[in-house]
Image 1: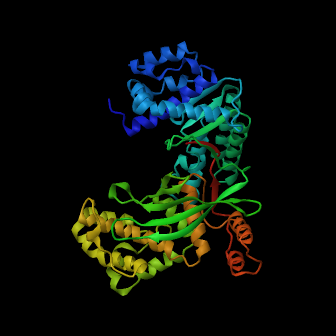
Image 2: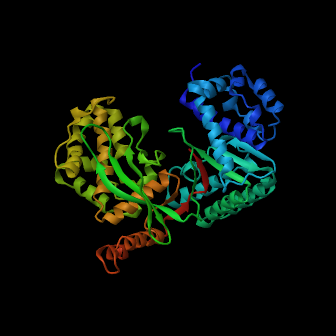
Length: 486
């Protein structure tokens, strides 16, 4: 019986809950992964949890429809490839329970996949109300995905925290709904509550990452008590012949907040990449390179259009200068009559034209695409070098969109603003926070880092940092604290 990627997602999350219950109850000696080979349905699973005394901890997992339809696959999932997943889960539990910051107490806990959180104690219910306010404040068509606030796959909650959590969520939701304006204080209070309950050993939001190298690592994201901060550097744009995309290359350093000392240079090396198929929309997604951040998410079009425009418009102005050339006057009338506002990309109109007549679209857009390519590379794009495209015409659709993103980022005039714009994009995709513009903290930590590297007051770097205008108004929220197990 084949185990699909979706099966792995559901089973890895559900089994984390079961293994947590086993460790929490001290039943490790009773765990035999081959027992699962005989499980056919929910009756078998419920009997097993009852016999081990796990009921109460895993009740929400036992009633999870996504797991119930996959009970017969648990054995294969745990035991295939020399019990790779079973061994990984054991390592996860050993790390989880031995970590000094994870204070699993003697009280009763409930573990469940994020999709099965009961409404009364579901922090995402409060987030949904906040995201409605953000949508209205920014004029977005859709809400910012909840995973950008907290991407946890599993939540472990102490039963003694139930009443407090219910009251907090209910009061918080009502306060938000009764206020017509968005206020960043809403998110701060929600974040502080969850972080405080983690420190008390009552709530553990856990984000699971695919195992690699047989080693399990636990990290803590968005911890305001952490002494280090991720600082992002823009390194270059890749807008090359052999593909349909553009890649915003970046590096992340871990920098001490107080001293500015770089604790770990190039902690992450990766890229923010344009999607390359029409069906994938126009999202940007992070691809990890070397380093610790190999798995991150993506962000929607209106989110990153707003982030780039509200942080630095100099690259967008360069893009519009290309569009304003006389030779593109017909294209301007057709596609770019309203690109000076929030929606500065032409993708939406391009897709409509492509769907109507893809051959005509490719023919008319090609000179513009080549102009974008030449602006970055000083030569024309060799579309024939691209392999694996759905069609010749779709190459031009995707490369045009990629070129607009490439110009908007690479032609930002100041290197420091390239860094901060890239950091704002990274923060949203990596569930670190959502905001545009330049914050005081982004400037201050860079000043301290420059000083550590020998920079002096009055130096060119110092003057550049002092000349950057700070704007906290577009810092919408910081993401919530969560534990990463990878």
